[in-house]
Length: 381
Image 1: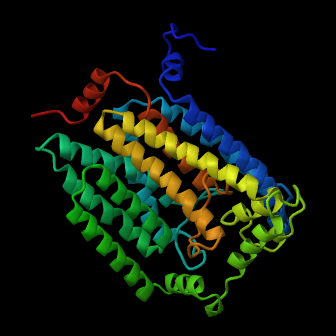
Image 2: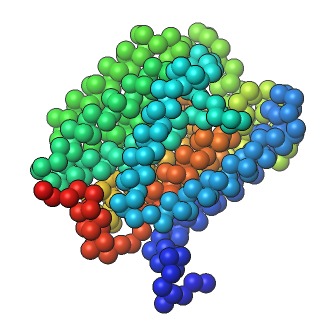
């Protein structure tokens, strides 16, 4: 146990972070490895890979994920903003490079290959985008000589237009909703609420009209006979077969025919083998992390910290909700992972970055330290 009297970087960190939030994230990461051991092997065998290929890869990515999350959580507010700006710039550059040099997977250019690794840059852009949006909104409210609100408005189209062109409608929708959430917390007028709501409906309508894959997913959701709904139907069957207590670890059969049993539909595999009770417990872990994060954000007196923490935890919770709702056929398929549970290196590393930001933002800091950080970022003329 670290003493409160110990004046070291780790001692200061340990007594200022929220340890309940960290515990919730740790439980989620360990649960992800357990559930992936159920959903990963059948998919690996179908692809001619070693049985525990995806499990081993997840452990391989979990180590650098922790090496990202923990050091980032030590950062000061000034360094959080600077790191977010750097990650955002590099991420957007890689997204643009993916159009020219990235492989086409399922009709989209979302990945770029660097050596033996495939990276999805949009995953890393998301947490950086949240921090930069919160920074812009907070500065616009704090200082009249900084066009923060205008910069926040420009940041949204600059981010989502490349995502639409990939195309990646799911990430576009997630980023836009989170941006609106930050805007709302920043003091959005009801006039803007109605305007943004109308713009969102127009955007969905335009996507349905001009993006064939979006139209196909929405039509399959509304009418199963309009197209291939194999994965969603099979996922629903997994819940039915598993019942309340599940069929037991390794006894599931649906995972042997679900192509995305280790990623998008790992929640359904969990339901069949471990039961609906375990799915509810998993949902409660997500809910605990979200509620804890929002509570910490609400308590924070600093506008930037409050907006950024709210945006990050909102993105985390919304992504989890979308994945689980797709699994139980409450939303059209989105191709979105379940945070820290689904297999995916880019997703795991970006989530670690986002949660590292969140832990750092919700640390208890003296008011003088926060003011000093802001004054050094935005010097007055």
